Image (tube, rainbow, N blue to C red):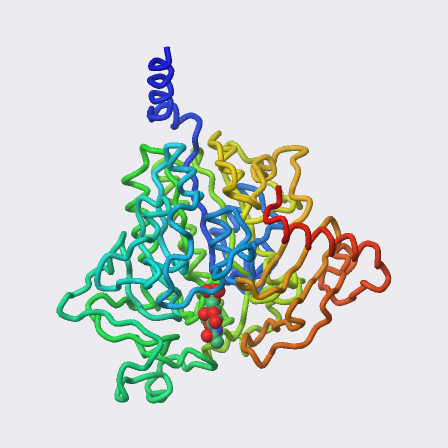
Amino acid sequence: MRFLLILLSLLITSSPFVFAQTKPNIIVIMADDLGYGDLSCYGATALHTPNIDRLAAEGQRFTRGYSSASTCTPTRYSFLTGTYAFREKGKGIAAPNSPLIIPAHTFTLPDLLKRAGYQTAVIGKWHLGLGDKNGPDWNGLLKPGPREIGFDYNFLLPTTNDRVPQVYVENQRVLNLDPKDPLWVGMKKPSPDHPTGKSHRDSLKMNWSHGHNGTIHNGISRIGFYTGGHAARFRDEDLGDKWVEKSIQWIEANQKDPFFLFFASHDLHVPRMPHERFQGKTALGFRGDAIIELDWAVGELMNTLDRLQLAENTLVIFCSDNGPVMDDGYQDYALAKVGDHRASGRYSGGKYSVYEGGTRTPFITRWKGEIQPGISDKLVCTIDLFASFAELTQTPIPTNACRDSFNLLPALLGQDKAQGRKSLIQQDNGNAGNFGYLSGKWKLQRHDKKRTRNLQVAKALSNTPVPKFQLYDLTDDPEEKKNIIKQHPDIAERLKTELATLIKTGTSH
Ligand code: NG6
Ligand code: CA
């Protein structure tokens, strides 16, 4: 009898026919540094994003959709683990030689979907580190990495485009690496005659404004230093095309299975260097042009789903890893050319901050035939995709895994009477100790460091002192301009206690 049951369950979990009917493909498109106000479907008028607008028109467009942090690595960490990044040390912005920051034994979102019978891939920016505690072995096997945490296939920008090295990683190796020209990566200048953004500033095609004055590649100096690996190096202008090319290939190859693709665009992270065919497409400079490149990529993915007749069997989520920034280290005139464009929409702050602009970002779900088109004001966050996909695929999550994710599937699918989150913790970077806490219409800010960044120039000098606690009523004051903590001490105390308890107990459940 027991044998029969096992056989039956094996048949159920391995039959492609069952999946085709019940388990939709999932594509999560995560933009980089895209703000709430950066798309025409979210009110931008300085540029036009027809493909993402179409996605929004065919699905649910959320007005209270959030990334879980206002920097990249912690949002990606939380997306893949379902746990707030501030709970563990070392989950802040990863350095070029960072080891994999998600321990291989962690039960991750791709693990969950593999258990549900999916093929899984990540294509694009990784920025979660590679290798064991000694860091990446750039000339050998880059292990552990995405494979060890559940991705069957990966094609990566291993760090960020402003961090060395500018090479692709496919599965566990640097692509096209010539062993006779080994790759060396470090934070120390390798030799006195090594050209850098400091020593050869006049030769740069895009100048740096702060940091980013290490090794020069493609006329752009970066964070950190490297030598060798010349045959493996990419041109920044080609990254967008590459993610699309590899994604289409992978979708075509896996169209018969249920699949999960994490499409992690590098756009619009600095150095913003879109393909020549997008350069000059907007009046906003390369920051705007990179948004057009991103929109093009989304269009290519949607066209592929249409061509393969997969649109009605694929849940597409579009989101961002954190809010916008103007000068993030390069002189690309983003601020000079911004005009009336408000990258954070009506909200204050942006990348690095716990003001709304830091994490309140575009958030769209589309599943043709399943999701009724509309606009949703439900509170949802990238961290909730984990538990929601568990529900979608009817796959259990082991105890102690995924500690802060909520099943919001009905809200993501735009169902009547669906509930959003009741509360959400916003964080900036790693364990930096700045939090936002959303509860109903209220927003508490807690600044353990008593300093915050400003939106326009993300350098340390722009840090401005702030009181440790602030309280805002987002219905009256979405811009977080009127700190009303003195008028509502009871509410402030309640929120302070709830936030402290959520931090202390180590889980939201
Ligand atoms: C900061 C970098 C910034 C960007 C950010 C990570 C400096 C001065 N600033 O440390 O340019 O790389 O890290 O961005 O070096 S993120 O979107 O990947 O989180
Ligand atoms: Ca980012």
